[in-house]
Image (cartoon, rainbow over all chains, first blue to last red; front, side, top):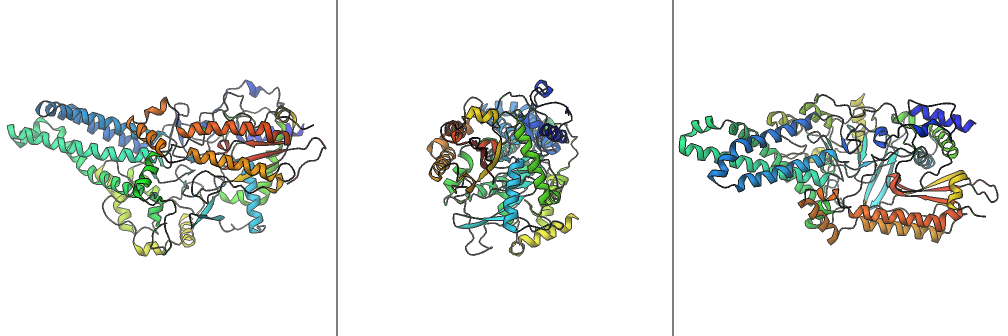
Length: 479
Length: 145
């Protein structure tokens, strides 16, 4: 029957195995291996442990972070602690141990959890939105790209523009942003951190903050006690002998010295962000700065520092919206495959999707969603074939490369002008160069914020942060 | 004879879908618009629909509420290095279960008898409340948009 044919043709778009002659009821799909949703995930993330662990595509710098922390801490516990425990107090290794465990725990939690990825729109939703937008704009002629779609919302008295994401086919909620490295829209997007190998967003911001805070304490702790160790030894045997007896201390001091400035600075910066309830993204763009306009204020701030801090760190942890370990249902509409913005715009495209979607739904006798939890039903291989599925990449990304990639969010087929980070046109170059170059020199986990007291944006660049002109610049530079 | 939920699942065909979008006027908290979609005019009362959406909004507000309880949970979790969530459910998850039950109950009692079906927003990434309109089988008309 014709419904069955269009269904299997649609399947063939997504999965490698499909049987044209099968009917929905006695299909051999029922007996096939059930596929989980993470295997069909349309973003650029990598999944491990059967979908429990979720990271960005390039994780080389994360391994560097791990090595630095483990090696430095390991050397501290092996070489400095025995001396300090006997000379001063056994509480020193104990406190060090607790700090170390906390640092590792929060790092792994930040790196492995879902930052708050918004799942892409189902074909029906996308079609519905497209139709509403076409009605609002008047029918477009196709051909040239029409102006980007935006919706304005009044939030607590402040006008906020919601942008339409061409990749995810949704209007982004306020504070969400599309990460071009991971190719996902992330809620309350803060920044993409190569040092933790993941985006930092709504669901893992508190872990990230706890990580940099505890790492600051750990770094200062190790630095202080290694210096104490060397001093105590030199009192009995002279400075050079002390250094010879404990060579690891030299390495630790060097690493810690350079890290302290950047990590402590970064912690300070994020403490400021938390107390004013802003994201790194908003702060860098100056979205709520009073320099933009007299009435410009942050509509999300609760007014006082204590509430803002509590909201950021102790608010209820939202659940992951992408359900990565659930099984793919044969009847659930899968998000449309990633295409670039241009092809998806035409009205015919959306109509054919709609036409394709409805027969698919109509042919299935089982209801789409009878139970909120969807365990173990038979599934169809309705997945995009071309996905990076947990293949380990060699650590090819150097810190500066990832840093540059971060500043220039123009990778892949993300053609839209939306940027979640400054492009070189916007950022005054010295700080940009400085903060990109420093990780190489310091070789210790460092974020993307000015931890050096250098003002990251100047009033001049802020005034020129006019969205449309920037978008034009971004488009030109992407060509 | 109006179809029951089981009947709908087995044989009804989908005529249309309506999407109730998010309402961001109070911020990033999860709330849905209470505006009554025109496609549902012939199927259900405005009051009933608004009541459902309003209850859902209240439940989501409860899930994200900042208060003594959530602070306690947050601090406890921090102190145990977040390992406590391996054995305990978060407050948000508990409320999501309540929401799922509420939607199930609404479907059984109110929406299915009218040939409609609510989809739990969590299955659509909390973006929309999807309402599926089934073909009106009693008189063979297909509800258009």
